[in-house]
Length: 249
Image (cartoon, rainbow, N blue to C red; front, side):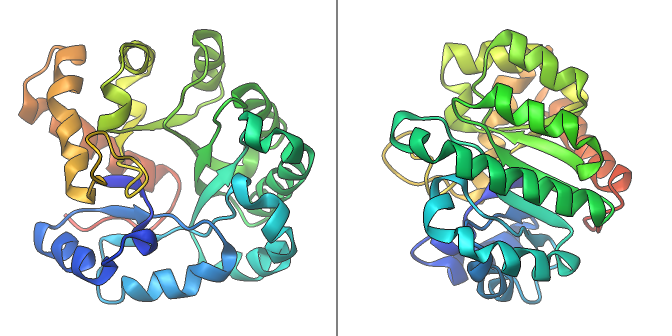
């Protein structure tokens, strides 16, 4: 599985889709703007294991705030939402009030629509993201993508029922592994964040999410096949509990 990649932003998305189909990978293809959603969904035509998430990336808040109405109009067609959230990095900090307004609006839309599976960005803004999730807990099933908050923020996220998607780049750092060790193993999913994640200077491909399995196995003290089964069980539970379309066996 790859529960967070930007399929439309690879230079050759059609060939990647063909390989995903051949390898029988379950992929959540996130988008960064509502206007990109239809075209990105069309890339996955005929690929039952690729789901396309409707997103409005926090780093694009100031440029794409006018697409919030489009987001709302597309929401009934989209059981998965992402990439959404907040980014508190210095270069985006001045847009945080607008980011937060958009994020809250999206969470409220999702709650009104009966809940969604949400892939959420929380870089340097974990506490604010968790505040908004807590106040709008009927928004659905939040998955914190590449979580980099503190241990106390992680504990709070766990108590709020959040899930976590982790990738090879995250597991390369001591801090990332320390966070993963504290995450409930039944709420962990795999991601790549490709093509943005480039641990060796080359964009990660969706099938490389499984590179995490040996590292997770060491953390969980499990064999690779047991680790893989746990992850697949998590994916099935995520989709069943959120009443979203289930991946085919």
